[in-house]
Length: 278
Image (cartoon, rainbow, N blue to C red; front, side, top):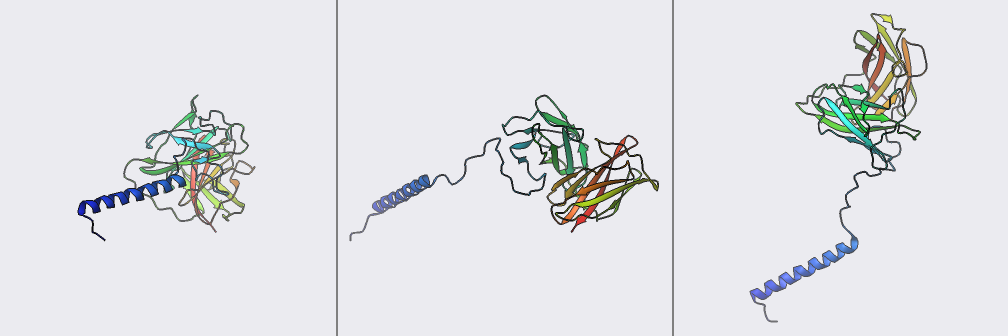
């Protein structure tokens, strides 16, 4: 068989590559694109993972939390888009407010329970006193009008600066805040209803004249260390102190940070605990 000249060999090689490319292109065309098309701006996230704790998703059942600031400085602005892709402007009042905003740093410091203001276009805004620079998680807790159940959506937002995380305090039964001592009784049991009681004292004397705050004598938020799974618990009916009772159900073993808001003397105070669920 006669040998090919250099130009002929080059031409044959090029033709071979072209043929391979054509075959590959045809196969790819038949199989469809490798990468999926980009998601629409307002994707319906249904169905979501069964049993997923609240606050871990930025979107659920077609509702999406949309931060309107790229950095957290002195104000947080956001909106909630509905299943139709439009900002939600109709809410059902729950515990005295249309929406509760919780902001906390990822190391579980700097907890803030805020009540933002909504304008006619559906944009919410609230000043946020920061505990320092670092990554924060913002939770919007709300009930859209016409929906029986509430939603808690979460989004990450950073406060610029030098972030120095604080270690989570060890589990403890007492916490001090603004001259008050709060004592926790009861234990967290994963996947089960766990009765808790928080007793408020001041100067060694029981406080028996707690004031209603958002229609209750106390509000309790629990956040799981690590992913900050969110649990908002409201109190059982009872007297105005010294004890406020709750029933909490945490989703898994591990450490949780508990934040109790109570009002006395016209001021809201927040007592914080670390608790172990096992």
